[in-house]
Each structure stands twice: as C-alpha cells, then as structure tokens.
Length: 340
Image (cartoon, rainbow, N blue to C red; front, top):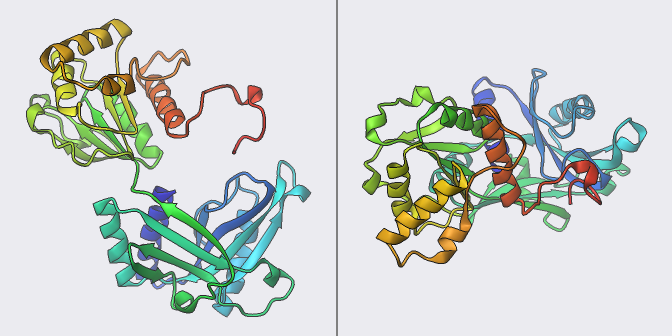
C-alpha cells in the first residue's frame, strides 16, 4: 500500500503545480466480498484524469462522476457501490471522497519519512449514514508521522474524530536487495519494480555496470564486497543473492550473516547451497544456525520456470508467499475466500 500512496502523492503534487483541483477516493468499508480491500485509493482531477484503482474497473466511472460533485461543493461525501447488482461482484463498497490539497509541510514530511524508512499512519473519518442524510459532516483524512499530524486538505484540518475511522499503517517501502549483475538480475529487477518495490542492485566494482542496465532500479551500489553497508536491510527487505560466482556469493554471505531480512534467497541448485554453507561455516563457525535456516535455496517456487523472466516470477512469487505467510496452492483448491 505504501508504494501506491507514494504514487498518488507524487501525482497530486504534479497536478497541483498545473493548478488542477483534486479529489481523493478511499475505500473505507466493505460488506461482503470485493475485488480489493479497504485502503485502496484513487486520485481524480478536474480535468477528467485519474490515477489508481478501487476495483477491477467496474466502479471507477461512477467514482469519477460523484467526484465531480465533491469538486463543485468542496465538501467530502461517502458513496456506496453495490456490486451485487453487477456481474462478478458480491459485496457493497463504501468510499470516502474528499478534496485533496497537499501543502509543502505534508510533502516534505512524507518524503523525509520515506527516505528515513519511518512508519506512517493514515486515519480516515467518515459516516456511512450520511448517504441517506446528506448533511455536511467533518469527514476527511489525515497523515500521522510520529507525533505530527498532516491533514489532507484545509477542510480536514478540523475533523470530527468521533465518526467511524478507517486507519491503516504505511510501513517503509518494501525493498529488494538484488546482489548480482547478470541478465537474469535485469529481469528480476524489472518485474520487482513493477510491483512497486524499491530495488537496490548490488554489484561488485569489477562488473562495470551502470544503473541504466537495470530498468526500474532505484540505486546501483558498487562497494567492495567487504565494505557492503547492511544497516538498511530490515524486515521490509528481501535479499536475493545471484552473482553466479561461488567465491563472490561466499563473501557476500559473510557480510550478510548478521542481517535479518524478511526473505533471503540463494540462486542455484541445492548442492551449491550446501557448498556455500560449508564454506561459510568453515570461515565463521559461530554463524547462528537460525541464519542458515532462514535462507531459501534454491530460491523460487516450482512453476517449471526456464528463462530469466520466468525464474524472476518464480522467485518473486516465493517472496510474496513468505511475506504473506501463505503456502502456494492453486486458487481452485483454496478453501474459503481468496482474501482473508
């Protein structure tokens, strides 16, 4: 969710520079089943543009139509959409539509929080009953960063906090430390970036690669292996080691043995993994067994992947399954709802 909100904020700042008026639509409540969960957002301009999505495509036009009313009145409202009356949907979604005006303090604090990997929180106050009683209410949203509060607009500077509240946490942007510079790393970088992940490519200086070689990468890091800075590797980080050099992989493992990322994958077959473990333990016998147990090697799930793009999908699917604590199975074999 953090990367989606980041995209909306950056788009809003760009549109504001063009003197466009904006409305933000947020799914705050769902009854039954919907295509997406509460917390998804869509940004609408007075020029007929929108960014983001609140459904699979069946709701957006109605959201835009009602957003025009908010632009006219400059007052927030709640709208509902009954998917039971449409094909393919089984629930009712409620959306808060509110004017959006991001000031300089909001923008500065938001970007500083992203840079420092600080957790943020959004609170949206709304009243479903206002659907049948369209009185003006002090509905709206605010961003909380540590002890500071940043309203989404001048209207939401005086919110009625006794209304219903949908709150969501924005963790630091998920990042992928991709250690390797061969063509399969390029495929993994490109697809991970499409997921909204911040990709940090790590290559040894002798690779002589530029960041242009890795479409979607946020940074290319080329320190000497023994000078790799691991302080930014946290629980919102995945690491994939894929240098195609056994000696380099051993050296990187030596530098990374004290890290605790959310996921750590090793490219290559099982016998290569065992050789890596043996070499690491020979050099550092005090290495914690828990570190070795956390390593996923060979990285990926079995989908019959053959080429670089398919291998990237296999690895990213495993990362997502670990992050979401899910055992990969075909959805037709899954009992209960898709989204739990």
